[in-house]
Length: 401
Length: 127
Ligand code: FES
Ligand SMILES: [Fe+2]
Image 1 (spheres, each protein chain N blue to C red):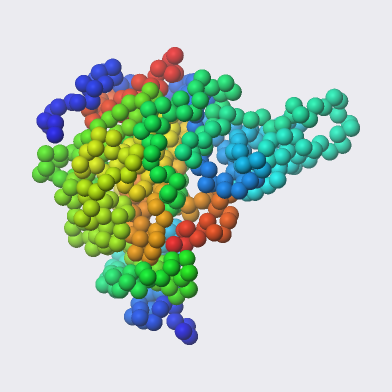
Image 2: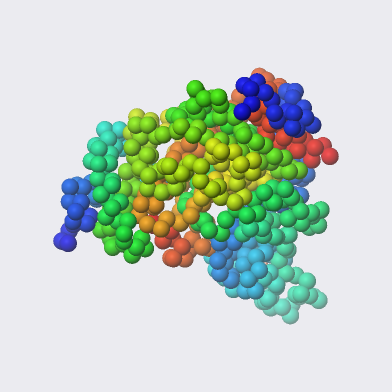
């Protein structure tokens, strides 16, 4: 255990410095446009998991404001998952919406028809066209690769790195996590009036837990312990990505909360099952082997999180809409319940995190209002907010680079 | 059983079944946040002491083969979990100082995906 004023992360990552940070990137529309061009149009972005598209012909359309594009993600008859621009090669109409299963896509404007592998298959009244080469007029594709069941796209036609190279050390740290054993329990979504990075910041430090979450998670902190503020137990930086481990108070009991207590007695759900505190940890978690580890925050740059714990994980997507507006999405995955006791226990797990997330989202809107007021020009970060510092450093280098 | 909503051993909870046994999370949350704390407390105090009996009754039975009475009982137990934070933590129906519920979408696991269109996948949310 470090002394209360030890600053281990500044020592470990001295290149990040320790000074205040300008708020320009959180409030400037010009900066936002640079992020669009230099970051989002060049990075690998997650658009879902392979289980979302179980059968050949399954497709989903996603409108991605920051790419100014509507995309079709589709599993072709050949089982391969591809991503296409949702744009007809004839005169540019959008050809699909929502989600479903289809042999192909037919444009509503003049009936041009594409297979679910993107080839142009049929043009009505084709004889009226001039030297039309159908082989060259398939849907415009984007780079699309999968890793551990996660589907990523890249709007850059010639990305400088493959997905696995891009994920680098973060992919390596997570490669043994049993994602495939878990199923989604629910999905949450909100349009949040805050900059995408400001929202991310609220999910990549534990400093706020004792305040924003004093009711929901306040007892997870032990004011009498040698770690009253639940300091991060370790941090790793992997190029633009980062990972931080959060410990828990080993003395935690859900005092005067019998239903919450019951959820821990029925199964190993949200936190460790009662009496199993020092059990084996799930592979791909807790890299520094902390005895009282709770979960890992894993930030896949620029806008995707895969936070992992024992027997569950969740993802966040932060889709920028405007400098002060973001589409926030959350999916929570667990090992599927084997019986009613586990189902009831997991119900508590998912709604407890859900209630806690509403505390975070409320806070970040108030933060954005404060930043937009212009009253302050910079923010001041502690050693515990090293992930916040890293995010702005990475973004700034790409935007100015 | 004629008109019985819950399995016979849970006759005492019958008055709560029609109003509080709700099959989806968004519906359960809406019921919680649109109820008074008094009615939440009444429900909580009636169901909490039965929870262990409910688990003992349901646990040996295959989750995907519940009949409608058993499914209602499971949903009643999930509703108890939904109501619990209001009673045990907040002392009010909804989370204090939190993001407006009207702007916060709670969706089934495969919402907006083709997988969500297949019946066998939606069973996951049922259980
Ligand atoms: S724009 Fe699609 S067929 Fe004409
Ligand atoms: Fe939080």
